[in-house]
Length: 281
Ligand SMILES: Cc1cc2nc3c(=O)[nH]c(=O)nc-3n(C[C@H](O)[C@H](O)[C@H](O)COP(=O)(O)O)c2cc1C
Image (cartoon, rainbow, N blue to C red; front, side, top):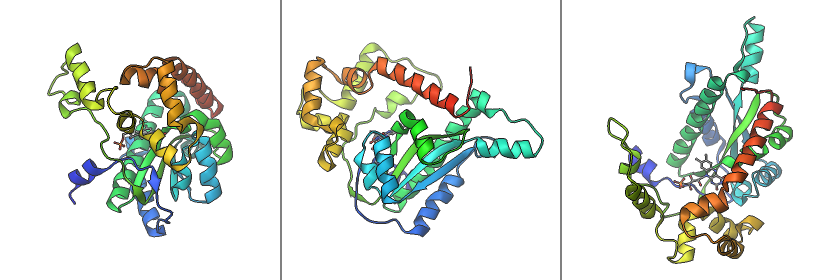
């Protein structure tokens, strides 16, 4: 399969077979992570390889009871790591103040995602599936304690990997013309924006189950696997009625990512950064 087709067929996988990934493939995935582009080639990242059942279960709990994190044979915790660089700089008699420089932090996060996406693509080529788990950002302190992560190291992203039992279909995306701007930015009209999202998500009143599969596949998948509280679809539907949710934007920003809560979580993230020795402002 050519690379375009491989990338176009990739989906986030949340349903895994109980099948180990051979050690040589795990090592290849780690090589792919290590060989990613890196700003200044400084490589301010570390990857924690989680395979033991007990740790997988704990990690799954930590990221908000997402069953696939426990069920996947492998999860990689991608960390921004300035600890190693700071030590090295100190031994070499030079100041390194990345923990106070937002630019260092942003480049480190970009590096980290380049590494993680290398793994996603290589995994795909080995017929493995994967899914990013961003909710680790809400429990950085807890993850740092459990995985014995030192100051100046931040777990920023989890990637769970395994052999797919099933692969989602029909994951909606915006059209190419909506995200691509030729030569200069073209502001879409209100009508064009409305149409772009309608074409992406479909109509809220259509078949609810099908609609949920498009907009809230995590809950549909989780309910099939372990029914954690957050994924009880009947309660979700009741809550949507209670909140008088009428369209996908309201679903996203009133129910799934409520604006005020996101701002509160932001405070928690800044606190976690401070706890790990980072301070930018
Ligand atoms: C930054 C980021 C965070 C994500 N966090 C989660 C997560 O916590 N749980 C989950 O099941 N999927 C998570 N995903 C996967 C997205 O839900 C998925 O990429 C999206 O629905 C599009 O589907 P696709 O990957 O099949 O194209 C995350 C993806 C990204 C890029």
